[in-house]
Image 1: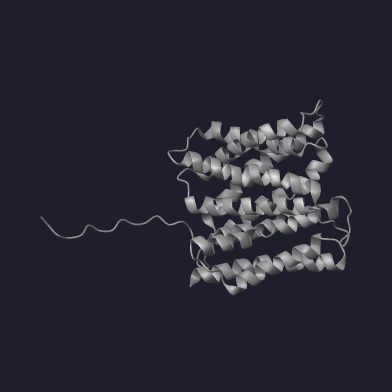
Image 2: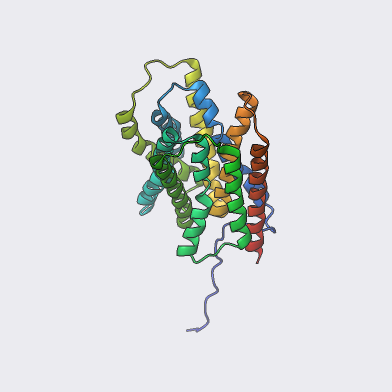
Length: 307
C-alpha cells in the first residue's frame, strides 16, 4: 500500500469583500436596493393603507410573500436548518417588526431610526466577542459618524424621549443585528430565495396571533389599500428581503448593516419631494455626513479584506 497523502480537496469559498473582486460594487448596489425599498414603506403606509393597523400590515407584508416563495421553490430545510430558520425568522422578522411597532408608537420616527443605526456597532461587538475579529479604527469612527449624521438629519429639538420606546427600539436593533450575524455565520445550503421564503413564512406565522390579538381586519379595502398591500408584499418583502439575504451571503454583515441608513434617508427624501417637507441646513449637513460615512465604511472594509 502507498503511504502518499491524497490531494486536498478544493474548498468552496464565498466572494470576499475586497477591491480585487469585480462583483463587490454590483453586490453593494443590489444590496442597497433593499433598505431603499424599505424606505418607501412610510409613504405607502400613510398614503395607501388603512390607519392604525401596523401589525396587520406587517403580517400581510411578509406572510403572502413567504407562502409564494416556499410554494414556488418547494424546497424544505434539512435537519437543524428547521430550528435555525425559525430562530432567524423570529430575530429578523417577528421580533424586529414587533419592536419597531412599539417604538414607532412611543417615539418620533427620527429617534427610532437613530437607535436602529446602532446595528453595525452591535454586529461589530458580536464579531469581536465570538469570532475575535476586531474592526479597524477607521470603520468604527466612520460608523459613529454615520450615527451622528443620522441624528442631525432626523432628530429635532422638540422630540420626546420615552424609556419604553427607547428600550423597544434598542431591542429591535439587537434582534436584527444578531439575526444578520447568525445568517452569515450559519451559511444555509439552500438558495437565497428559499432562505428568504422560509424566514418570511415563519416570521409571518409568528406575527399573526399577535396581530389578531391587538388589531382587527379592515372591514373594507379600497383599491388604494389593495395596491399598497401588494406593493409592500412584493417589493417591500419578497424583492427587498431576497436582496438583503443575498447581500449577507456575499458581503460582510457590517457592510450590509451600514447600508440600512438608506432606509430613513429614502423616507426623508420622499417626504421632501412628495410631501414638500423642508430640510434645514443642519439636516442637509447630516444627510451628506451619513452618506459620506457609508462610503468610508465600505472603503475601510475593502482595505481590511485586502490585507
